[in-house]
Each structure stands twice: as C-alpha cells, then as structure tokens.
Length: 458
Image 1 (cartoon, rainbow, N blue to C red):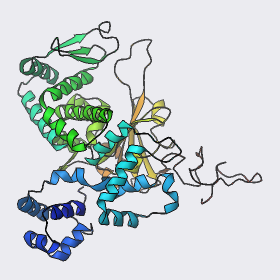
Image 2 (cartoon, rainbow, N blue to C red; image 1 turned 90 degrees about the horizontal axis):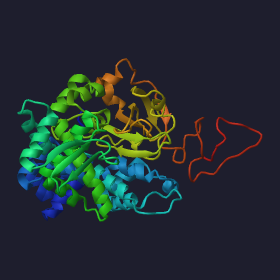
Image 3 (cartoon, rainbow, N blue to C red; image 1 turned 120 degrees about the vertical axis):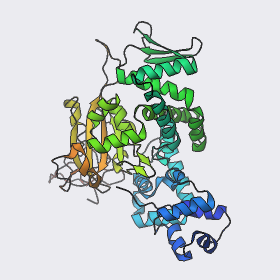
Image 4 (cartoon, helix red, strand yellow; image 1 turned 180 degrees about the horizontal axis):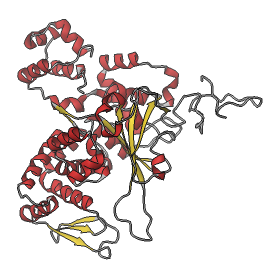
C-alpha cells in the first residue's frame, strides 16, 4: 500500500534555494501558484508527475525525501511532545501540523535538541550517543538506497559462483581484498565472536557462531572493504558531533549492508510478497536468523518498490529496550517504555514460538505485533545464556496479506496498550504499576478502584 507523499518543506526549501517566487516556480512546473502553495503547506501530496518535473527542472533527488522530513514528520514530532514535560500545553494534531508547515526548521531544531538531551521525566539531562545515532537512522526511516544498491550488486556477483554464499564471500575476501577467513576454537577467541586482524590479513570467526551469524560476519567484512564511500557519505550527512554516536551509526550501517548482501532488496521483496512475509520461511530461504529478517523488514522503502511498513523492538525480561526502529511505519509502539500488556512478554515463556497480538496504543491506531524470543549466538554449557524478544509491529490495515494474520479478525478490538505507566494516561488499566508523570494522585481510603493509582483527569 503506497502512502501519499507530503513534502512541502522540501519543495519550499528547493524554491528558496533557487531564489524563485511561488508564481515563477509554478510556471516552470506547469501548475498554478495556488496549487504549489497548497503543496508547500502540506495540504496536497506530491504526485509522480510533479516529482518528475522537479527532477527534470531542478535535478531534485526524490531519495532525499526520507531523510529531509523535519523532525521525522508529524507523527514523530507528536510522540516527542507526548513527554510529560509538555502535558500542560494540550497540543493537538492541528497545532503540530501548523508548526511543521510554518516553521519546519524550528521543528527540526526542537527534535534534535530533544533527542540529544533526553526527556524531562525527572532525569539528569545528558547526551546519549545511542539516541543521537538512532535519530539519524530514523531521519532516513532506516532505508539507505546507496547501500542497498551496492549490496544488491555484490549479491548478484556472488550468485554467479553458483556455490554456497558463505564460501563465495570468503573467496571474494581472499582474492580481492587479500583477507583470509579462519574459523578458530573457543580457546583461541574466548571473548570474541569475530575479529579482523589486519596485520595477519585475517578475518577470524569463532566456532561459537551459527551458520547465519557466520554469513552475516562475512558480509559485514565485505561492507568494510567494498562500501566505505557509501557509509562515509551517510555518516557525513548525519552531521553527528559525538564520536561515539558516529561509531554507533557506522556499526548500524555496516550491519545494514550485510543484510542487503544476504537479502538483496528486489529478490527479498519478491519473496516477502510470495510468502506473505513468513519470517521463518524467509530465514530458511536466505540463510538468515529471525532477528536478521526482522531487521530487514523495517528497511523496505525503495521508491517505486516499497514493501510493508514494519517497526521493531528488542526487549529483555525487565522491559529494557536495546533496539527500536520505526522505519516508515511511524508507529507509536517504538516510543517510551514497553507496555506490560504486550504479547512480547508472553513470548519469554514460549521460547521459539511466534506470539501474534492485535493492540491499540493510547496514541491511536490498531497494530498487529509478532514477537519471538531470540538468543545471541555463542553461549556454551555453564555460561549465561541471554534471551531477548524481538517484536515486529505493522498497522492492522496493512496486515491482511501476512501469513501471521491468517484467521485473525483485524477489525476486532485490540488490547489497549500504552508507552509505559509513567507516560500512559489510560485511567481504567488494571495492570497499572505507577501513576502518570505530572498527574496528581487521587486517593480515597474508603473506596477501591481497579487500580490503587487513580489520578486526576481520568
């Protein structure tokens, strides 16, 4: 399902950069000034015809739209403004849309400051490199066209060998980059899963790695060798000032490239559509793990060949989130703390089973979630075995073709969830463990409600 493209901010910036009036630009594009005015105010979408005209007249690159939407768009800005520090402002969707239309630069400045300094939930304000890197990823909606194109071309070259993909990648590293691949015993690499020894010209892989993880490590090494310019270009464009944030972003981009090699865009999208996005089947077909496939599903936003829009969370038993990507989904599920009513927490007790659930976030909409446990490779007998749950989410109206949704009524009422008790203002939730931040408690020792945390305004 294609989403209407509203990009008035980009058109306005392009027009001003060309020192044109609306009337002059409208004349060059063959539209009326009033229509162009509506486009710039995001009251009309950009059509394919107009995109072509912009490209022909001004050399406009439509691929930049994913990265150029101020603050990540209205939904992303609304999620930031849901922070308790803004609770008294009562900003609605209309206010946010007007802000984006009238002052996109100011909205982007606010978003960058908020992402860098953190929320106002009573915490010490410190810069978080991971949050800064994630903000850069979300500005691109976790889709990097140049990395996808380079990875797809490399995958096509590897297929010509006609053999095992991992063997073909190891041969390419050896022949083209003079980097041999060695599989080492645990005793030789007790605290590493993979290591590049440039002095010995070796990529060293631990025997702890399963086949999918070995292939991923080989593809990452090829990314370091063959796509440095593409990675550098994205990092420069992100404009990160913190070195650690830059390293976070680089690590993500090299992982992205590895996924693009193992699951090349066009072939992977065709397989998704043919199988109903069956994650287990896709993993077997492309030799990838559940988490690899889940990550890849958040990236399918190529212009003219879009897949469905998924978001992703990875959580532990304590509800701590170690990965979150909204992609193009703009889902509220990735913001705040995970709600304990999410089926993702049930997945810990049903290891290896996909838990499917229909949920309704407080922020609105209905979402289908698919959650399953994942275990990082490498744990041996007697060692701590880590377990996480990876949860994918997709808007219910897009989920009808999914294998995971077969037999489900996607119009039924979903489980009401929030962004953690401190951010959630649902007044009737029996699972509540704390009142919302900024709301006064309402206590009466004579009465008892569904929750002891009744609060003003419910």
